[in-house]
Image (cartoon, rainbow, N blue to C red):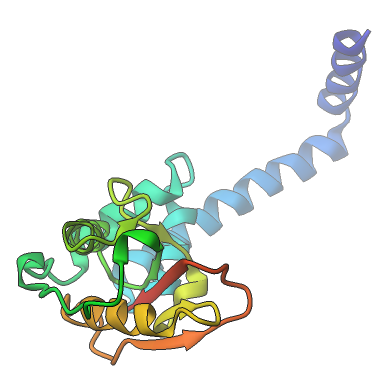
Length: 192
């Protein structure tokens, strides 16, 4: 029944000169828009977040996460040496009891974030999703902080110091209390 209805509708569209004209102009306009976006993407310098959004539109047949990671890796700064991350935890902080989540944005390469996350894991932090390299999200644009729940300030400050040593961001990484973060969970929000 559904296939028959679809065929009847398709036949009426194909046989209707006005509908075919509208569809032709629509397809032409989409093609022209894609060409313009491609030219803008390749020629005009723009902020990293906007460039990433346009790259997702230009390469619409590919997974956006892969496109942005590839673009960032090709144009972003080289990954810092993650081995320089010192262990700065005080004796009373037990990093293994804290789940650490990483969100990032901008020109940070996923490989750089992944290297930082692995080093944090080597320091004893319970880093979630280190092999995936964190979560790229535009919500992290302009941030450089570790978010924590009430009572977790000392751990958040220790984690912020360790993240700062990664040199992923040129801004200071601050510990910020946030009511949306659960107890014993720390969220790294960073961008460049």
